[in-house]
Amino acid sequence: MELKMTAQQVTDLIHLGFDAKRPMLSVEEVRPNFVRTRLLYRDSMLRPGKVLSGPAMFTAADLAMYALVLSHVGPQLMAVTANLNINFLNKAAPGDIIADGKLLKLGRRLAVMEAALFSSAAPELCIAHVTGSYALPIGS
Image (cartoon, rainbow, N blue to C red):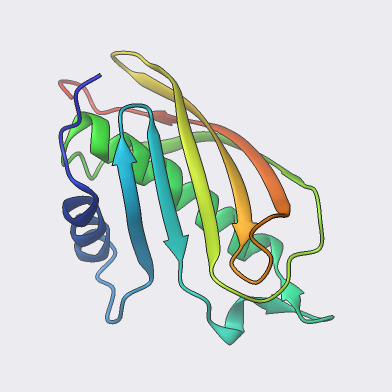
């Protein structure tokens, strides 16, 4: 499957679309059916017990899937989350959240994906498994 955007183009578009005042995400790699993203750590991502919070992991997964869609369909800012299911697997030590996303199916109106999340503090330990889909705008 042909890529429509580079990792840097996707990073820039996401920051523009969210009007980010400072970097929040880095798209580290895109290749056919795959993306690796990094949600940059902030203290606000912690929950009591000094572990990464569920909302932070949800954000990382959703942004990874958004990056995966953009890299394959082009600059479609109105692609939106249709479904996201997250299974928390392990306690997540504070650090950047790395997401490896895989495109399972890209249809005319829906993209179906999965992602594995890791903390940069312990990259050998998967902290969450995520499945989801994105609704694509007509004509994408």
